Image (cartoon, rainbow, N blue to C red; front, side, top):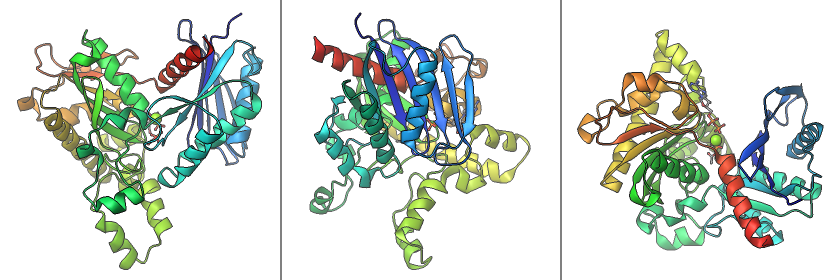
Length: 402
Ligand SMILES: Nc1ncnc2c1ncn2[C@@H]1O[C@H](COP(=O)(O)OP(=O)(O)O)[C@@H](O)[C@H]1O
Ligand SMILES: CC(=O)OP(=O)(O)O
Ligand SMILES: [Mg+2]
């Protein structure tokens, strides 16, 4: 029996998302989520193929315990990590710096490099490392593959990747724009080309990945030429809890006048800003509910979110010159019709428009929401980072074992 299954682990700072896929047909055998890791009320939700989710609430101390709980749930469905059908484990790793441009089989040297990059991804890389270490301990014989959020963005030209600061200082500290969510930008830009019935090389796409973290990218003929996140996932769009762009002097001001420490400002900008900082909620469903009830604070938060998004659409339109499609993806992009409508409103002179009836349709399928005669296609294209990670993992491990 040949091993055709891949387990994908997407470890966030306080959560683990996972999927087990059979790569013969990319079918999903199980999926799930552990959230609120480290709290008393951690929650595990496990969904086997065919439905019938199981939920469990209780304390899960750390990512190591979370992964062991996941392994137990999988075993209950006869899909345990000891299965000989498991070919590899694929891990989302957020920061790969300039070192990793491709999916990479993990060894001690790779682990050391991911660890070295912690200062530029303090929320994400430590969780990714724990996931990898636990998975390796459970199945030391299996290839473990890292798929990096930064990899897709390594094609950015220097003009987009460099900040306009002293070159020697920048190089000494590896300060440049790396970009994140690359697995999603890669998957969605390809899926958008497919939706248009074209090859990725024949289209230019602006991808708007709007989840809790959010980023935009400009993709020319299948290659990323610019993206909104930078050295860390803090730059760019307004996010659930992150500020995105602002004058960097705000930081000096808060230090000198506000007497805040570096760590306090880091926490402020990464965890207490964005939508939650502006209106107390980071979930777009709740914000829309409040807007509909006439809540002014929620309305202002929504308007700031949209204003920033519109600026990036305009910027990447200019970067690309010719745009074939704009694709909305991730939790907000796939579900929030008012966000899509507001982001494109007023951009008719650029050939951009949304058809209200199409925009209101709810579906898990990639779909167009622009009018039939639109110059630029506007699309909703669900992302699937786990499938993309599994595909890249299996392609690499398949090649190695053949
Ligand atoms: N039906 C919906 N309408 C509006 N927003 C939604 C809906 N469902 C999810 N969201 C938004 O999507 C966000 C989560 O997106 P997701 O891509 O899953 O984020 P992440 O991967 O960063 O956790 C939620 O915080 C919420 O704002
Ligand atoms: C890089 C990043 O922002 O990831 P997430 O959206 O999962 O927080
Ligand atoms: Mg996400």
